[in-house]
Image 1 (cartoon, helix red, strand yellow):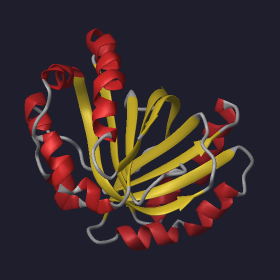
Image 2 (image 1 turned 60 degrees about the vertical axis):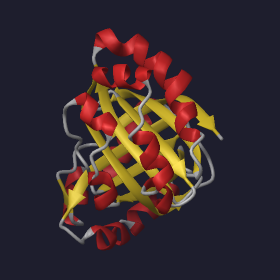
Image 3 (image 1 turned 45 degrees about the vertical axis):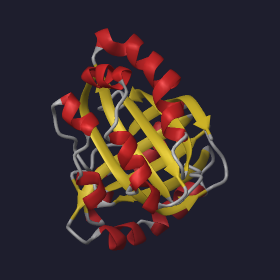
Length: 225
């Protein structure tokens, strides 16, 4: 993904079927504009699953990693609107990390997105991302690949429990590493390519813990500042 900053908030989740209409109205009408208005936030995007374990992926791109751990974002998280308090009741199986952008390659945006989220041994994130370099080269040389990114969680910031998480009543998963590959080709070809090059077995050999096959998503909405 061609990210527009050096920080990111990455969120995967399900929505219960009875809450889907309210989620769409809230997320596009209130939540994304609210987030993008925070100082240092640049852009928000939402994707819906085509073939993934969780139904939605959302990413907010920020000027730098300090923004996602900063007071403006924290204040917003701990002052949820009434609609937010209602909407978060529809969320299930949330995975959320506040991240530094470690790799950001490519200039294009595509309509398809593959995501991986997993852990590494504590302190092993930088070495793992560095070891992925040849695979990133291979991806960027493949027709249909628009861009890619590797993001690494700020564990302290990601682990801070905010009012929105408390209102939902369940804890987030907090993956240490996420990979994002954006494409513009046909869905089957894109999925086959990314899942072969960045397979769970390949990632595990390079230090990934708990990696699953890539989730494949389609773009739904982008909002820029």
